[in-house]
Structures are given as C-alpha cells and as structure tokens.
Length: 585
Image (cartoon, rainbow, N blue to C red; front, top):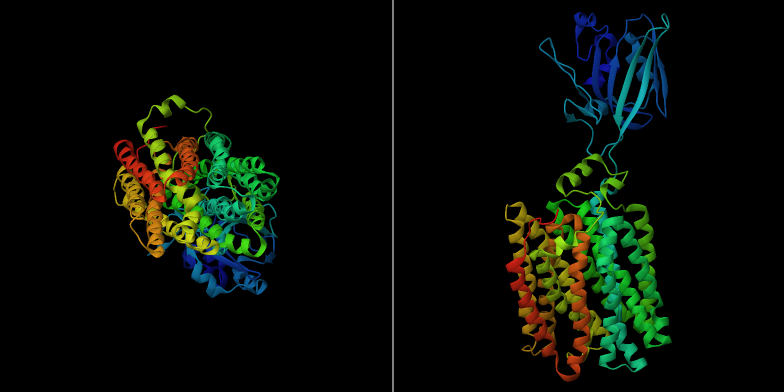
C-alpha cells in the first residue's frame, strides 16, 4: 500500500511527513522539517529491488526536481504534487501490483495518531527487526530533490535496498560447503588407498610376491602415514586447515600416479612410494578436524563428521568397484593413473572455495557467521601446545587406546578383505572387488544414521558423555560379535552379510571417539586427533603386517579372534575413562 500511495496519490505532499504517515490536508501542514521512513519495493528497468526510503524534508518549494541516481537509471521529476504521475510515466518497468505485495511501512498511522518512526541501524534492521530477505545483500542509492526557485534548499532521499533472493546454490550454507569439500577429499583419500588392495593381486602374480611381502607392501603405507599425524595436527592448528589439507591431497595424488613406475623399478622403490603416499594422507584427518572445529556448531558436530567420514567409506566403495574394471580393461597401472589424476580437479575447487575459518571468508553472510561463532568454540589461533597438560588427562589416553583397538580391526578389513574373499570364499578378482563394496557402502549409510541419532539425543537433553559412550560401545561390540560369527558361517553369502553388519556397526564410531576430540579440547582438535590417530596408525602397521604372518602359520579365524579381543578391551577402556566434557581450554 505504501508504494501505491507513492506512485498513484495525486498529492505527494500529503503522503510524506516527519517519519510518520499522514492523511488529508491537516497532515500536509505538518510535513515541513520532518522525517519519513518507508520500506518499499522498487522494480526499475525490469530489475526488482527491495527498497527502504528515507526522506528528509526541507522547506516546501513550489517547484522541485527529483533525481534518482543508480547504476542503471536517472530520472527527473517536477513538483511533488505531480511526482507519482511523472515517475510512473518515466519508469515504465514498474509493476505497482508486484510492489504493493512486497512493501511495508516502518511507521504507521492509527486512528489519527502519529506512530513513532522506525529506526535503521547499521545492519539493516528497523525497530530491531530485519525487513530484508534472509539471503539479501544491502545496496544503497541516492536521490536528490533540487529546488529550481531556491538552489540552496534541497531534500535528500536515501534509498536503501537489497538485491533479489539468490539461487539455491548460492544460498547453500558455506559451513556445509566446507563439509562437502572435506567429504570429497576423503573420498579421494580412500580411493587412492584401497586401489592397492585390488591391484596387489595381479601385481603379486607379476612380481612373484608371497603373503609376507604383500603384507609388507600394504603396511609400508602406514610408515609415512604415521609420521605426519601429530605434525599435521600441529601444522593445521597453527596455520589453518585449508593449506594443510590442500597440501595433503596434492602430495598423495602425485604419489599415487608414480606408484606403477616405482613398482617396476623394484620393491624398495615401491615401499618408499607407498610411504610417501602415507605422508600426504596422514595430514588429512587432523586438518579436517581442525577445519570442522572452526566451521561447525556443536549442535551439528556428529552429523558433519559422519558425513565427512562416510566419504572415506564411499571412497572405498568407488575404489573397490572400479578398480577391477580398470584392471581388466587397461591393466593394473591404469588404476593408479586414473585415481591419482582426480586430485587436481579437487584442488582447483578447494583453492577457490575453501577458507580455514569463517573469519577468513569475506563472502560469508552475517547470519551464518553469527550461527557458527555463537554455536561453536573460541577460534583463537594456537601458538603453543600444552603437551604436559594434554598427556596428563585420562580421557585423552582413553581416546588413544580406543583408537588403537578400533583401527586394528578396521585396517585389517580395509587391506585384507579382497584377499579373504579371493582365498577363502573363492571369488574371482572382479567378484572380490564388487563384494567388498557392500560392507563399505553399509558403513557410509550407518555413519550418517549414527550422526543424526547422536545429534538428536544431544538436542533432547542427553549428556554428550553418555551419547559418546553409547555410540562407541555400538561401534566396538557390534563388529566384535559379527567377526566372531565368521568362523561359523558356511556360505559366502552369510560371510559377506557378517562383514557388512560388522562394518556398518563399526561406523557408529564416527559419533563416538571420532567426535570426541572436538568435545574435550576443541582448540587442539587437530593435535588430539593426530595423537590418537598415531596410535590408530600403529595398529594399522602392526595389524596389517601381523595378519600376513598369522596367515602363513595360522588361519583367518585367528586373525578375527585378535580383532575381537581388542574390540572388547577398547569397550572397557572407553566406558571407564572417556568423557564428553571440555577438559582442555
């Protein structure tokens, strides 16, 4: 209705007043030296703009000109009494019905009384309420009234408006864009890691490697992976996760591409190249943990981490599914060349879209920044790591021990599952790769289910400590039960089912110990994950190598029994000493 009055009322002077609405002849006499605040919607030159008008009146003049200055338009209108008619004639693109639907007054007239004018603050709020769209961008233009009779008198109109709503992909929350980019990085991480699990079968035939040599090659990855866990955490906490994660992806992608060349040069070169690849992947988890501790509010922590870690599982799915196809058509080197080259695409997007913290992102809207900074921890940079204090806390050691127990079983399944399917279940190469997909696909689904369950329980008032213990107990005891059943099943289908159930319940750990680093020490999340994951990597090194030696003298039942025992130990330690409360400031 405000725009209708501005554009169609025969007497412009009867509409404007001192920050108030007025009607009739009596109100016109009071319009001198007053102020009007009107929020309106203007549509000029076929561009819709939500506008707020601020008019400061000087002395009433008999003849004035109205100048509207914008990047697209400038109009001149003669006296205010005929302004609406002239303006509508000059700006043909205005649709008054559309404008009326979107306009409002910051001050109103009620039963002949003046209502106090709305006030505009520096953030575009009127009377404490935001009139602009949720995703709008403030824009300002200026319009001048100039008197032809008295050049010294002028009236200023400030039009403050906002651009139209952006498309959905531009309104997508930046914090979840960071989560998706981390998800993609972890997808590539496991694609490049598990391709050796499939390629090792034709490679061992070509180079005549026995089981012990295969175990050595599989474990050589963890030599480098072990070196950069703590270093990567310190580096990320001090310089920011964007730089560290970007470095890691580029490094391991190059190492992946060079793997076939190293294998043909000889076993020592291959071991070194796999260790180099581990160096790059070793910084990924600490860097990601640092990034999410800055970008994600506590209320979204479990589901965001679950989504990122499900990228690892889907990376295993993708790698295990496509590796046999590529090997069959192009030979085993093609797996490393194709997977490694994908890192360059990710890195280009990462450079243009990612930021280490919300404070570094100039395009982050104010509302989301307030949500992130208000719902998460302090984001001051880390200058010194309090090692003595960290290592003196029992919950930190609960994390370290539990991570070791968890990763022993996880990495055995990650690296040896195709061999198990091939040797025990008698599946061929293609079948081994495709059937290995099922447990990891199950993990990707269950990780996100667990994340939503954990965040929901916390939002319902259950303590973080209780939620973390529940989720991690499922992540330990579920795999322990189903691995213990593998020796009893008689058919390949049931064996695959047990593997899938084991891995699916294992994924609840993402809402247990993998979320706990940010709970107990959010400022040192990268360092804490580096510490615990160092223990996890040691489990991968010893567990993967030990499995090769166990298989030379024992059976797969012995391999699974060791994993079950460690799962039970991890359950006891976690429930006795873990906490969800912050213990490190």
